[in-house]
Length: 410
Image 1 (cartoon, rainbow, N blue to C red):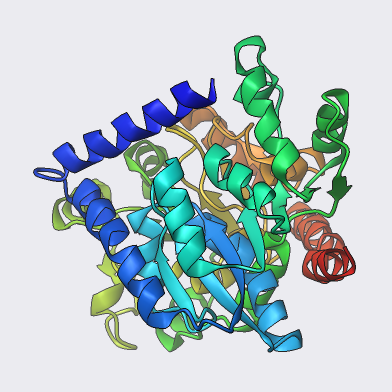
Image 2 (cartoon, rainbow, N blue to C red):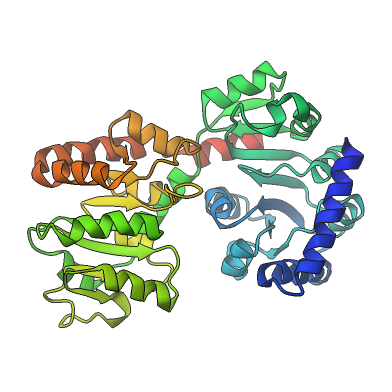
């Protein structure tokens, strides 16, 4: 099966090469991987001790970032090598100052794997959440390089645990230790004789705490959010989310809305503005004067959302009517009720929020209207929910310290 796996990876690499002729993302991946060896030759110090962190994309990077920064602060003798597989991670964080070397990870084929490890010569490897490259893990194990998986979560429907995927389960035995988020993951691994496992939680709680402490302040948003009208911050929204939110907002003058679309091309912004029937303004056009009298702000810039949630009394997280919801913890860290669509079950923190009655899943415009009516009409209940959510965040902070101590004791 390993030969078949490797053959599939070769075909995937070839497909990326061909599609790079007309697909921008594939072209960025191909060119990025092509430059990896050059970057390693130029930047890796022969005598340096490198801890290699690998993140598939931006979300996993944010998950691993607290541990990277803890190592950098507490163990400055180590250097950090950071790799990404996706352009959406690399292009955003290629200048991240917390790592000494940043590059793409080459495809998981034996020759590329050996070449990468020969040049990088890491003393330790840390993979984040969902990264299981069979040939990399096998070669790291063969070279006796300690290899860890952090903030991992496992489900019974994953390939490892299906009858036709048992061969892939072997990849997990190559990890020195697996740090999982919950008891269910540890139990599932135990059932399949994977026992080098600890329950440590999710480093994203530490990350969102840090983000909140460093949140930007916007005077125009202070002006916008002042007054008696509760503000709903709708973050990372897609068209299905926007349709039901705007429909309700248009007929409820007792609230204000800040909406931050996941994508902000001009046509999409115009479409949102066409649906709004109350005074609105794009964030890029706001001043202390222009924001006065507006009921809705459209965030047309990236990188602001995690700070903007602080101005809301309620949050809506987009994506739940598509492939899956976006980051609920970015909003929950401010201790406010969190609303999202029906596709949330793969996300533990969303399930946790629902269990403590701090998060709410809606399946239709009617569900959303009923929930919003309740939240707007009952400020005392809303405040009670805020306390529950804030307590949930506080109880889950501190994972980074546990991971750091466990890894360096091991």
